[in-house]
Amino acid sequence: MPAEEATPAIVLRTRDYLESDRIVTLLTEQAGKLGGIAKGAKASRRRFEHRLEPFSHVMLYFRRRPHGQLVFITRAEAADLQPFRLEDDLGRLALGAYMLELAEALTSEDAEASGAYHLLAEALAALAVGAANTALRQAYELRLFRWAGFGMQFDRCRVCAETQAGPAAVYFIIGRGGIVCARCRERAPEGGIRLGAASAAALVELGGMPLADAAAATAAGADGALAIARFIASVVDRKLRSVEFLDSVIAPATRA
Ligand SMILES: [Zn+2]
Image (cartoon, rainbow, N blue to C red; front, side, top):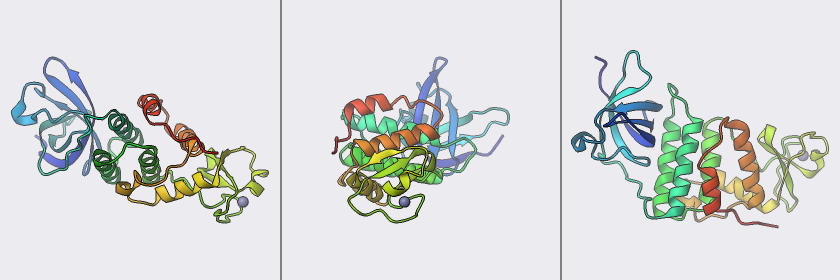
């Protein structure tokens, strides 16, 4: 029998299986993204203590199965891991669900994802104690995409490389993951999404700060949100189910 492994993990998604089992998708610190089956999860309080729900932060014990995609989850404990308490607030639930779904979309099984685990933990911890707002959402999006190798850049023109810190608008080019200045825009055939200077500056700030501080920072306006959303859609090859609800609960400010 394969050895039992243990790792801190955050539950991304669950579904019931047969009468008493549960299939669980988790983002772990040590073992990347995992799908596992928890036998008797709905009945065994001793082994699972109802801790295998989305947002659960657990010490996961599991064994790999030689011929199965799903690992066999032996138990899950709270240990001394920080719980993420979001349950009483619609905004927090909406943003939290989106954070889970985005983390799932950007990670793959059998690939290291310790950085994504830590970002998700940091984001959910910030969400549990602070506001569920656009600034935290944008900071998480920027940080998670940078972790995945899709860093977006908002302060330097992708063509002439000049730093853009002035009052002029810039243009976000989805295919380049970055901006071009007004002068270079004419030579960039892709067009681009117009970003006001304030939104571009806000995204530079948000991308470089700890997630614990993000909710108190200034968010980019609807132009910045559109640029990020289009970029995400170009990278993630699936429709994110949680976005529509999130957008209906937390909307970015419209900015001139
Ligand atoms: Zn330029």
